[in-house]
Structure formats: C-alpha cells, structure tokens
Image (cartoon, rainbow, N blue to C red):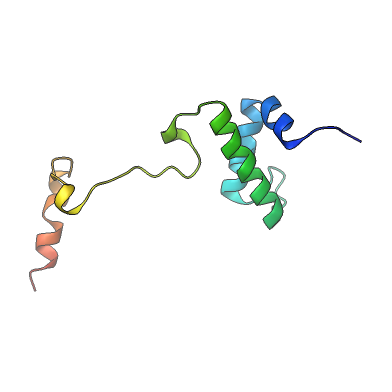
Length: 94
C-alpha cells in the first residue's frame, strides 16, 4: 500500500499533471473520456487549487478566476469600447 498523502501528492505534482487535472475539472471527464464522479471532481479541484496556492500561480491564471469589473458610481466608463458605449441609452429609447 502506498504511503502517498494528499499533501505529498500536491508537492510532487508536475505542471503536466496540474494541467491534466485542471482540464479534467473543466470538462468533467478524464483524458480517456470517462466521466468524473462528483467525488473525483471535488478532489481534483481541491488538488488544482492547492497546487496553484503552493506554486504561486498568478491570480489571473487560476481556476475560477473572473476579471473584476466595476460598474455603477465606481465606473468611469473609460474602458468601454465605443461600439458598446451607447447600448444602455439605446435600450431605454422605446
């Protein structure tokens, strides 16, 4: 029987294994096409998150990352493309 613990597995995980687990979680299936069970998905996701934390993966490359956008009074609107700038105004014209 193997004495591999979850923590040891994370420390020994290679970037290739990390990428494979990240893809498996995203697609909900293994590279050979078999579906992940709910438990496998949970364990793979935990391993991916722990790997990212331990290896200081940049925030924008982490699983589940969403770019923060501002809206409302905090938004200056300076980053809105011109073709989208008038959408809210056009929608309200009925």
